[in-house]
Image (cartoon, helix red, strand yellow):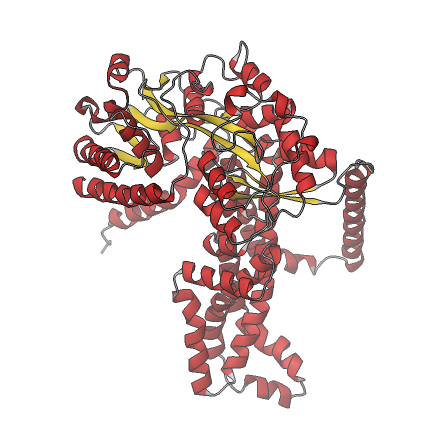
Length: 630
């Protein structure tokens, strides 16, 4: 009797495979996209692969990821295997206790393990960097190896090693020739799990690294403003590398069996030829690397530690500075001014910071910055007068502007009536015509600024009654307008025209408008935030002279142009600003690139600890109201 076929199982398998592999295929396809969009394919191109190969950060992150993974896998496999074999010979109570201890790191939330490692390194004053990342990866990989090896050891005859030694084996030979071959499948599976866990890890790596050492997951995370499409290219490269590795693991035994049948001399000849070729390649690379270096560079061998926002640096400026000065630049990234402040306040040493206006005011008040030596700076006359002498540093004694701009409304010209914007300003976020079609920015400062300005108040108000009115305004907005509260997701979402309007920084609006001609940028006449980020030198900087050199380099035309053209935020260099916005410039005609400077209601944020805390607490309540409304 012929069995009846049930197609459900096959359909389920196909759907499962599609669920797992279609995102990978999607990523690979878009790695060849000509445009910057992550959702619209505009044509075939290898530009993102070229960008990936030219990016020092990406290549360094790729190297760190795989070197740490390979070393951690090798070491954890050896240690885990020996530990598992040793436990199998221990007393039952010891074995059971250690198995529970081994399971604990795998059952613990990863954030707990990460903080534990971080505190351990801080306690013993171990400088965080490549070594601490490697040690942490080895530690959390060992339990996975032991978990894979232990079942194989349990399945062995406990008298196997004794029988081998009775037949003349030494303990070492009994281990390597008898025990290990029997448990090899468990060792291999454990090492593969360890390798996968190491390559995939982000949380532990993020907490234990330092000194500019980043793996791929940290590099992607620090792209806080927008995900560079070249990440598709490097992710595709990782998939290809791992696929090749898996093929080799499966094919290697077959190839090894065939090679044994070949002539030994021929085999040795091939190995010798390969070794010569590899040695020659290494010599050529070393010659090219060292022959091209100048010997008269002013800061040869020194290191500059910079703490900057993610995705806030041009593609070529760091490499150009290193080449010109002979230094090594270590660039760490932060997500918020508050995150940066915690490290600086806790005496973590950096040579250069790029905080925002109100945070610079706080750092000056708390005596955490040193005054700049203007005799070492020949760039101040290159700066726009509209971004110098601001209230937080009237004489630019502590800071040199880096980027500046405004906070405004990005809107879809096909959906939003310009008359509504002109008549209502920020009040358009209460216009029910656009209900469910708006973005709010997840920031108490910017959201309260919007509400306060629409109510006719100063965004730096200390009046609690006015702040309460702004809170009520925001609660009304989230309860009636069904907004989506986002951070940097607004950039790509508005570039794709997914909603009608949203609150946005001018530099991000520049990118959005450059990507989508239907997008516009509007600044309400009721006033807005005129912000600036600037370069400052901390009090405890180890190399202030080199920091001054970088400030000069980043403010001169070439460095400032590279920064601004890549990031999209307004340059403090007047000539760069005019060239990028002027005829033939990359941002020609994009009004978001040029900050407004003629409205007396525009303000610069001032630091006030009391009002900051009040707004922070009230903003949390606004978000609760938003979640309840949805």
